[in-house]
Image (cartoon, rainbow, N blue to C red; front, side, top):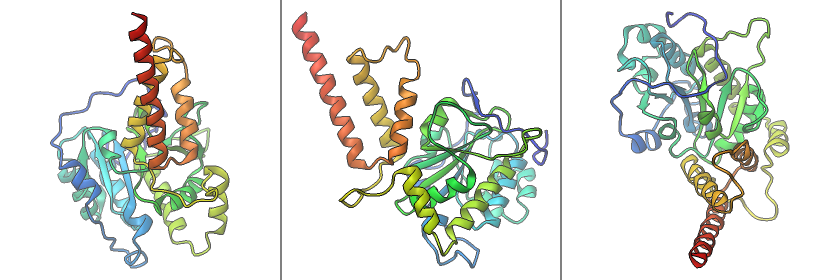
Length: 310
């Protein structure tokens, strides 16, 4: 299938497919510290959302789709493109990708390549995964417009990311649960096939409209209602980054196993439900440290109990 052809965006795949071995750019420094500037006069003087928003493509298969995604970003004033284990090596210089970029060669050339989604989300405190359909479990789920309103609020606090799956297999469950929320494009149910770059365009447009909005009263009300972002008596602290939250979940899961509250052989949906619970709260760094402190003491207590019983 060529890069410009329409492809479906499935929800998840049961197992991540093995991607090609790639040469990785300097991960933390290149993604977190890289400065981006927009050629769009409307946003050239704005920092905030346009410079703190990453668009992440997980295992993109077709060079043409990568180039078209770069074009979609540039038309909306964005420039930060991250590619997770693309199927084609050096896709930034692939002729088909360059042709489909159609003048957005700078966005394509500056795209960062990383091996995993965890690497792509280093330094990100809030992320949203695009899915092809709604599901029962997982993070909060919004339309692109509602997601853009929440993204506007979250971008004030630091780095955010929009995550898109492979053209054929979508995102794995693990990748989806690593994100803070879900976005679903309510396309025609009789023909919901969307090209990857088209999906990127829809989300980029909604974000641009939101970021440039002068009157964001309604957006603030939506954020307060859906994300519970209103502070209660004290100023909000720094938001926790994705890697800090993942470490918290690993620590918490170990503690729950030690308590025999979680059976690793039959986990059911416990961790998925806990992820959804914490995703709604918009975790601050200090809150993550508190949860990890609780987990640490649980593990210490259970270890002492096991030792005294032996």
